[in-house]
Length: 144
Image 1 (cartoon, helix red, strand yellow):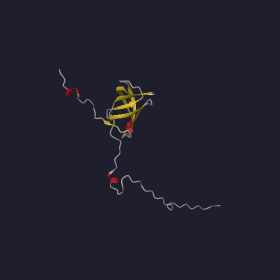
Image 2: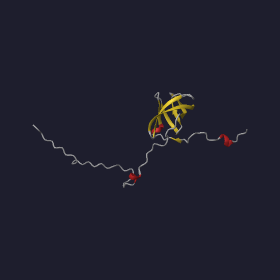
Image 3: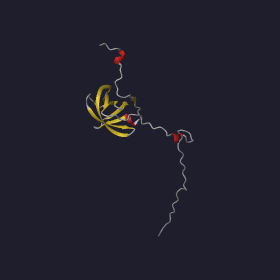
Image 4: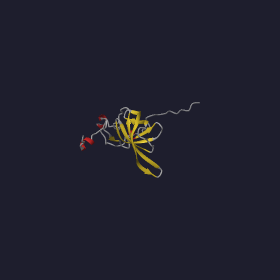
């Protein structure tokens, strides 16, 4: 049976993946052993990470991840791993992890509620704090 080019390019992922912004909580994960992972791309069933930890394919890991629902511990398996960068003092690896169960990998960026967006004022302007010394009056009487 001959395979055409389109047959080989079939999408095999369980869920669509997205690039994780560096300022998102999801961008930083941690292994139970303490090693740090930088999450480059994520989906609900897996993640592409970068680390200096040598992770071999087939290895099972417990990964602490911060999702919109809070911090979660997810059991993972290393699907692929390869050297992505060499430095004089470190070897950096890319490791593709598959999760044992689905997580919420949506963006943790919070939107401004419509009630607050409708308030008058300049967006991004600092909140004005009025210092009124007469708000609280302490009567300091000397008692004998």
